[in-house]
Length: 103
Length: 451
Image (cartoon, rainbow over all chains, first blue to last red; front, side, top):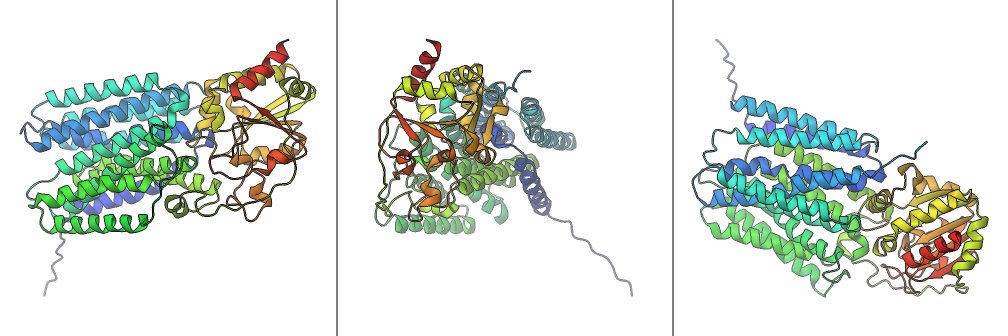
């Protein structure tokens, strides 16, 4: 008698959930170290990062089908681009103002 | 090629993480933001290399239009209006995720994908309208008061049930697009309903929470389109918003559900009789006290932002220092309308960040402070939080300005603060009221110093 080891492929969702779990814990560790004085730039910076949706929207907007998905994707690209560009620029503008006492 | 794209995403995730890590100190924060933005650029370039893309014109149009709007807003926005801007951007992020979730719908989607599509539409939709309402309240385009009506809880429960029902129907029968539209519409309505009962003073909590939702929506969209980088970046943002929400709630000594479901001060108006009398002071007399002071603490609140007084406050601080006094700023976590709002305003006015002390750092020093100047803050310095058990804010940590030798309170009139709570501080023996617009009053003090 031979026992055959049949390994089913692990579904992608498991990996995605794994990544989700790790990033949430990592996020907590990272953000807890941000001092209160930087909480506003942290929020606007986080805003910019949440514009990552643009990455998902790009392939939809460029599918070339001319269908609903393409238009929804193009709208999402525009909205998320506001977040990305505006978020990073305003965060930089704020952080440039934080100065230590001279001397 | 596909593998290369995936590796690029891994690098950009690492850049986001490094960027956030550098945000841990004001000295490295600017570089951190730059690192994070280069991670974003890399992710976008990688996404553009996707072989499924056959047509670039709408991507380019979208990026150009969105980028131009973002750039203009980022340049023009006043530092005092930062909370509104962040609220609005949260909303855009939510809407983008809603659209991506919707677009990800295809005929052969698995049930799991359908569930994630519903989630990204639900979270994205309520983030969008919730943020618009928050924006309206913060910019005073609509009344910032808590809107409550009888049966509100029932209406909200019906909406939630409606969302759950339509979502379930949609997952069972994705070909019937009506259920999808029902989920979209109800999520949008729910966002409005969730934010209207929350008053202006609680906005720091709401804005943090919506920040978190915009990340979670991106996360859900990541599941819907099977994209790692959306999940990583989205959950980093989600975690950040949740932490800020926790900090804000703790600083107000209230639970999150209390903030979300009970419009502040409603139904518990207790008439606390405060003994003593109000003692106004003129700018001239205030000047004599300040001139003799060797240690001054300035406690700013939302009133400083409204009066745009941060620059003249800095001027006063410089004059006091030139006069030999030690000047510090005490910042309460919920002063202003978003986390860290006061710090940004004072940084704009060139106040060095090592002069900005957190509540826990300034309180032990308060007894050695000669003059504490309260500028447009009320509830965050209210001693009722320590002394009067029946007060709605009892137990909330406050800055103990009343321990200073003298307290100057700059205030427009005797109207009570946002929360509508009496402030016994105004009646204390060592408190003097300097009535008028905060900017005018401080300019008056500056003039006295210069004459």
